[in-house]
Length: 320
Image (cartoon, rainbow, N blue to C red; front, side, top):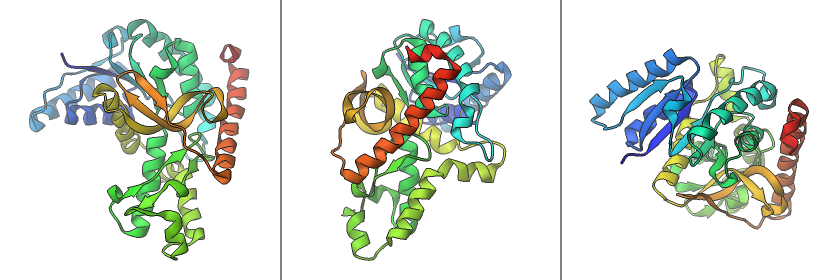
């Protein structure tokens, strides 16, 4: 029997997710949106493309949570996207209300699903989603680190003129301006990025520019688009997580996962490497951080904690 993935939100990311899932024949797809016409229209359009590609996938659009019942995976993109000049944090109040409705909609219809959240501000929204839904923390994760790492990877590939697959890198921490790209954990053609600095293949200043561009990767795209935010790369990142769960690939993927003592933090979501298999987050991979990395990671987690305090002021129930 084919698996079922429900996409909550049929906007740009939701539509792209549906298309990528159908191309991979990963699962049948239910596109959910309060604007039912958008969900039905996109589902029908993508369904018709399967006849061109020869893919065997069922796609439906709906505005009823009942149609998402017994989903294996739920990917949430519902919420308001950022506009130019708007930070991820500015979205907090609006998207908290939306995510509360979503949590109520999915917890009764698909209590056993693996839930991937893409809605910003990511770390707080995924934390709120887990609290509102009461679903197990290992089955509720946020998509962020894969996207941030892919941006870092791409910018480095352009700088060094090497294929992206020849680069291994990692970005930790909260999904925001304090995220932590990890030069010490980055290799290009098997060679450490730190060695390449010593060999004058890249200056420290240039690397710092690339790190800054990675942190502001989403804002750069918003500035160009004017009306809307990134959707191709976020969707591709979400599909990688869903595929690792459905196929039990046990990939180690950077994502916003629930920390229960790992990295010295408790009862908090933050971007860390996690093994994703058919039980959800099966293990948090603890990397030994050097002094500078630890410092940067703590700054990033502090930003998440500060935003959580604001979220609790908006909705005191999140303190429980």
